[in-house]
Length: 246
Image 1 (tube, rainbow, N blue to C red):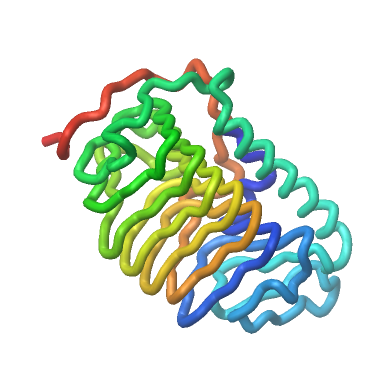
Image 2 (cartoon, rainbow, N blue to C red):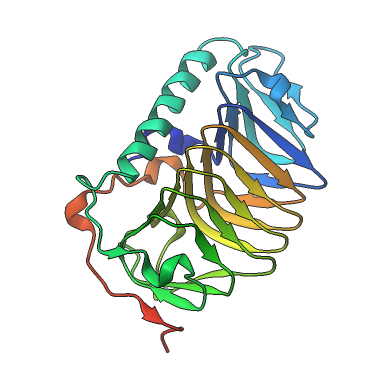
């Protein structure tokens, strides 16, 4: 899934980013078309010479918003458009044919997922630990017309060389990562993303409504210059397994 310029951000939201508690973010964050007033729970310090971005002690990176000086507004308009295109693309059966439908009825905890396109018409429920197994070039798309919920203190683990930058969580409804849970991958949400108390993400949150964080830790998985463009032919049709792979 080609993220385009949306891949320059660890968090990109159209409606706002709210933080409660000591959230820590590694990577750039942005909101558009809403203004910087929708970034709450952060102490923003506007860069004085150009006023193109802000900084915050909670963000190892920079903060951008649609009301900052040029060229920031145009840059963010493009990034949001790229985010919307990436979501639509990730949901496309034509571009990425399904290799597994409604696997385990959406209850994918205690499973090991191999490379492929997992399509769901039900909620994706991660209520026990989940493992991804694959190489550094393997691609995983997990998409649903419903929502995604990861339960409290549940972890997603990568094995065999699988990388977070190659895992795409695509949801038409909200994505909820409950307290002290850990998720890996790129979130493409048609609506919002919520990381509850003490949860963490190695990946990106690209949300078409709001992002809420509660003492969460978010880390970008790779530099923007290394963003891959996923071609349909590169997706193997591997089979998931019950339980972890030894």
